[in-house]
Length: 159
Image (cartoon, rainbow, N blue to C red; front, side):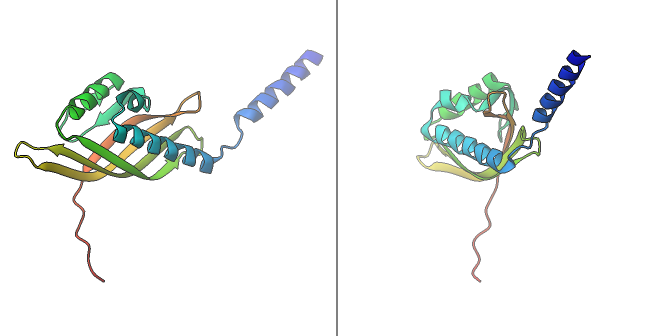
């Protein structure tokens, strides 16, 4: 009987630990930092560091390219894009949102993409992106789904 009571106490303690409150604002800050670090890796052209932010089974939707499924397919797309003359990609996250459970979230923001064109000029595109992230067992965040949308910003208006 005593061992049953001890087992119940231990089980209750473990269940209480499992349902502990998640510090959502800290998770949001960590996720936003992960996206900022990812953007820095992209701006530096560091493909190996860039690869660390995608989940192995991630999906990437890049305009004008087939859907890339899996980290290796995404890295192939990245290498192909980066091999183009004058390629430059920069982004800045605007916001991070994290689920109440603290293990799923998304970020979104603006990006700028530039590629040299044959006439000697540069093709520049801008737009928005959204990335869906999952928190890993080790506490890091990995992107599961990424999508970019080219947009045209309306001209500024005078008030």
